Image (tube, rainbow, N blue to C red):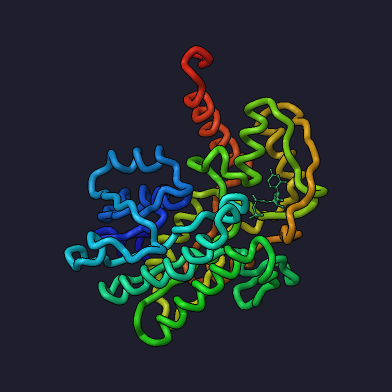
Length: 337
Ligand code: UDP
């Protein structure tokens, strides 16, 4: 197998959602591999600092637009022939995607269709970042790609879960009709630097709360499980998936098999912080999945990929990054030299 990203090195790559958490890491990795990268983002949940860092780089350009609307001429006028299109555009944290559920659903369905049409026009290979949420609150454990899921289509998570399921349906229809060459990644819980402090997800919440000396908010009993994958591993898998040869496209789970409870995550945080942390318990949100762990046999076989970052090391790096962000967000008088 070639080095990951080699096939995209001389390419012109569009990353929708490229200023977001995973998207900004992906843009940086593609630039490192030698690609020309155009980032398309509506800056709804993206961190401006992620974009500022990327704007310093050569071969990087930015288009501000919302994919629910017809794509701007800068992308569709035929002057740029994209070779690869990644779609990571959607708010992904439950409180953020539930804040505007109509927009979340349309981003996944209408937005994905706009990007698929661009792929059809330009002949670009298209990669959709789907989600473990397509499995809902799973009754099969761990979750292989052929498990069809247990999603509540009328619940508060449906705008995201069903939106991504519809996006997958569209992508596979384009492939069946010979309209686009497609790849689909189902991303499980991912963490790392460049998340928003107010993202609302468990890793960012627990880290920021412990750094600020607050009690850690645990929803429900804390015995629900997740499998937390470090962002560099996730991005490596996305680039390999885009590179991969597939006669018939199939979805591929991307995540780690190291499943832990939320309370075990607290224990891991205590080890990183070197001190005990206080907890307050809150109600479990509706439709919060009880268990989640990917079966990654397909990613291993097709991509030769395996996550390599241990939770302790990934959490330590993420804590360091958040500590710097918190310090930088304080007025100068309160900063400790
Ligand atoms: N969670 C928690 N405290 C928080 C935020 C989340 O206990 O401050 C729980 C949440 O209820 C869920 C798990 O942690 O069971 C992971 O939540 P997250 O929002 O990170 O991701 P998702 O539910 O989408 O997997």
